[in-house]
Amino acid sequence: MKLVREKVFSIITDNLQAFSLSDKFWQSMDGAFGTSYNSTIAELLRGKWQKGDFSDLPPIEMVDSAVLRGGQGAYSQQENRIYLSGDLIGNVEAISRVSIEEIGHYIDAQINQVDSPGDEGALFAALVQDE
Image: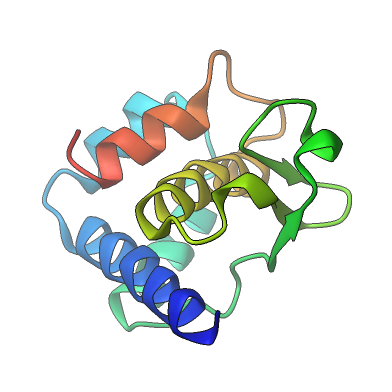
């Protein structure tokens, strides 16, 4: 399990760092979160990711799939925690993909006072992973 956790963390951080270094960073942020977000906070996150500092990311916890009511993941702003379905255990790609999507919801909560319309997490994940 430790190896899976390390591999997932590596995939997530590699993707976020590459995204933060991308020439399309701001265009992608606008596409996922709109254009009225707090760019100062976004720039702080970007700078940390460019340096390989991911210490501000919320912890990730695996939970019984029933807790998520059929979903694969969720971000709790109140608890500042990402929850992933236990059904994903062992599937490194799925854990990484869903984690990046939920990190998108975390970012939205940091940079926007109001939840962005649509599924900004899915949009963010697609942009970060070049999908």
